[in-house]
Image 1 (cartoon, rainbow, N blue to C red):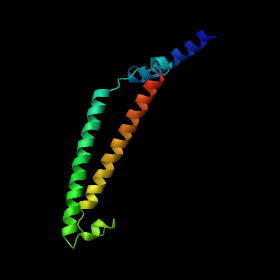
Image 2 (cartoon, rainbow, N blue to C red; image 1 turned 90 degrees about the vertical axis):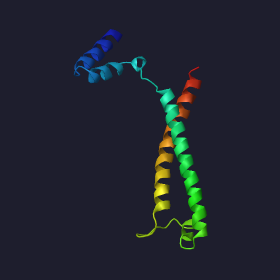
Image 3 (cartoon, rainbow, N blue to C red; image 1 turned 180 degrees about the vertical axis):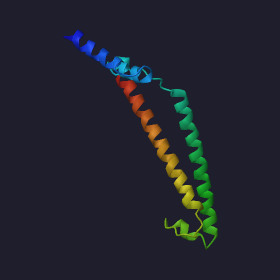
Image 4 (cartoon, rainbow, N blue to C red; image 1 turned 135 degrees about the horizontal axis):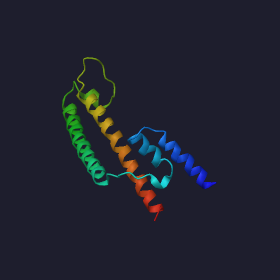
Length: 123
């Protein structure tokens, strides 16, 4: 019975075009054949780089808060997220950039945490 299943799976692989489609079909035959490079070092470097970029943006935001506090025309930005056309968009754009980077950082960090947990379980 097992030989029959294996034969069907190999035939399924052969139905795919040569190249990456056939490699993917072959790897899909058995979970033990799923081998992918982890890119751990570059993953860590990417997280470190994002940490730095987010840190710089955080410093810029704090500096902008101090400038806004000193300028009566900009103090509204300290208590409101409201933005209207024609208003200075510096802080709005800064938050958009922070949101984008934090989302990427959070996704990568969550992935890293999950991978490390799975490694602990498999030991």
